[in-house]
Length: 77
Image 1: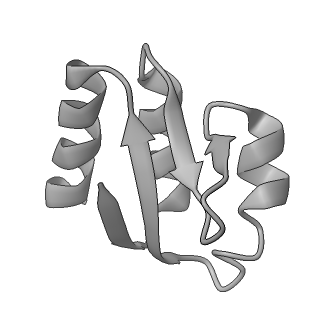
Image 2: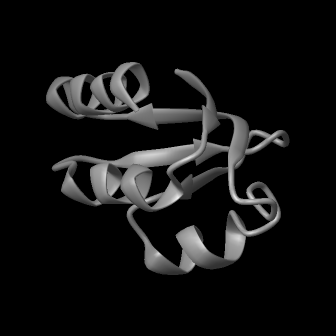
C-alpha cells in the first residue's frame, strides 16, 4: 500500500511496532526494509522524513490485522 503525508512519525512507528507480522518499506530500487527494526526506522528512513514528515512511501504488511491498523492510522491521523 502507498502511504503519504505522515506528519506524526512517532505515532506511525508506534503503530508499526504494534503489528504482529512483517511490515516492510519498499524502496525505489525494489529493496524491502524491515520497518519493525529500530535501525531501519532511524537510519534508513532519516532522509525520507528529514523535515518532520513522510511525504509518500510504499509499505507492505504480511498480516490482515496489521493492514487494518495501518489503514486506521492513515484515515484517523
